Length: 249
Image 1: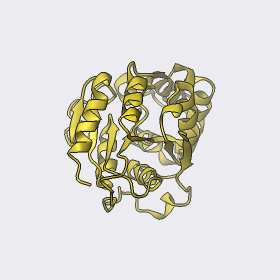
Image 2: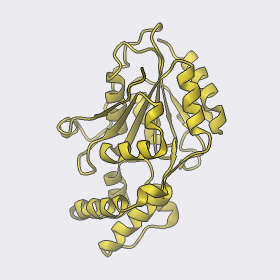
Image 3: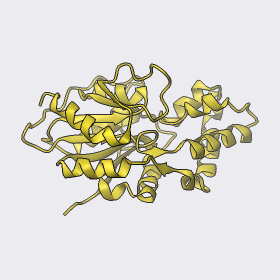
Image 4: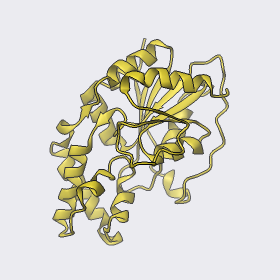
């Protein structure tokens, strides 16, 4: 029976860690066990920019701050929101209010603007049929990742959804990836699939290679450190399985 689990990172854990991305020890794997495919959500499985960028713009407007350009707004898709707000001119003392304004706008209906990329659900089915354990590992807070995955039908095709703590709790992609891997002790080889540089960094911090997808929100050259690239959702299963086959157990 296929059981989907939804787990959160402990909210006390990130506050005890340094603000820089931790260097993690590669996970011990069992070559005879099921391989693991870790999947980013925004920009990899879901086309989520319209709802996210509109909510970010609303947050800036509510605080009387200049709204970033369209290109800058797109850069908010993927990384932890509080980091992007700070990087785009929100004073530290206004970050909590900006987060609250973003949440209010997003929760009021932005979810309905999210779509699964064409071919993504079929790709997940193919990876499951190949015997892979599938885990969503996203910087989106858990309380928003779960509804998105349910709305798009992703949750029925994966073995777990791992999101970040609330927006106002420091976190990193490396911590989310570590939590996802910890849920499958003794797993086989693993790969991360993502569209942004923080997916690559988070994967490598855990000793996991990253397959970069080019249909997401990366800037030109942003995925230069990815271990492989894939351009079409139809090719995702093949590319992931090829990278798994090259990954030492």
